[in-house]
Length: 482
Image (cartoon, rainbow, N blue to C red; front, top):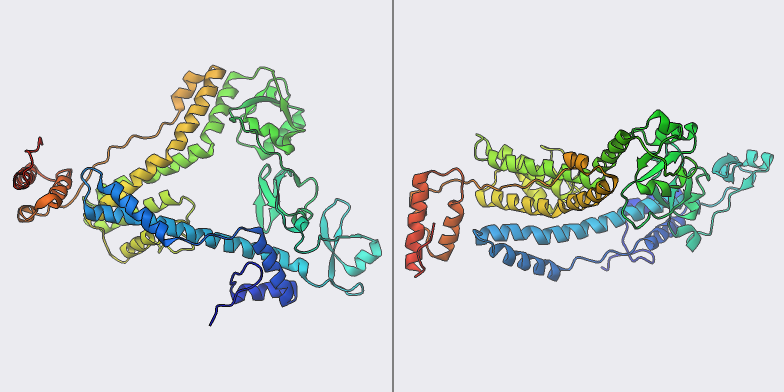
């Protein structure tokens, strides 16, 4: 039997969602219209391509296998994470779209409900004196001659196209029980925009494409300074700056925020040097690239500590859990899974299913083997190097600005540079008899890895070198220099 699909999007929403939409729209037809309209707002997600996943796997397998000291098993385990990352990202992309469609449809459905009659006692939407759309009883609306709110036709371009606005209200606005802070850029359709007054949302002005290196501003009045500080309490402001006698150093983009237009203005007045230093450091350490790196480094430290702890603790499985948990946080810092609890798709965000399954198996008493631990350590370090490049870019940007402002020496004193890690490998020595069974090129690969272990003894190293020399002789290879 052919699977039933709905609407112009050709998707198959669950019955619970369609039932909820029908209830909100007071008809199944209205619920369907809400779903179709929401689906049209978001581009369809391209299906995962199994051929591309396979290609990614073999490319990564070849890359890892070519690295010195790698083994076929270790390379296969490490490479397996690449297509899983791809497939999981595709699943997450589809899940995110479905959630957006459902949320938007739920917000549209009530507007598609049949309008109440003029004589009923139900609530109707009217436009208040402040320009906001509010609910009022029909009788009260007739009595006060309130201006009725006329929404754009459902499905029209005017009602569906999302536009960018900037929150201008001090303290932010409430949207579905969530506080959206001032100066935040939000997206609403014109229909949704009309739910807020002109003092809540202003037209969005894109930030300058130039680097946001900081600019000096002055407050237009002491009252403006107090209002601005309510929304930006983290900045250091002197009494002279509040009075507008000296300037304050802020990110350039703050001058583009509509809410600031009456509070601050560009200035050429001198600023207190210590306040310049304090604020310069503040918007450096609060930059998204800075905070992202500190989180990344914290998790990388945890991966290394846990990896090494697996070879010193009586229960290595505990260290394995901590290592995989930290690795999952590196993959997706926004995941809400807590260490020690089962990782589900709902709380682990973009973490691949394979990693999540390994983590859950460890919670049930499992433990990793040496090649698996080594593979996760290498993957974490590779991820760390790739993601820490954001801090390098941030440092270049702020170093140039500090040089311009004559505070380069002070900035160098607290500038954070990416940590350079020395990766050390550990493992269980398999025993002299097992060493003697290693033969061929695969045996050479395995022995070269075991020889790197930090926790093996000199006699064990000697045994490994002896076997390596024997294999190289059998294969007709020249003696090793090690």
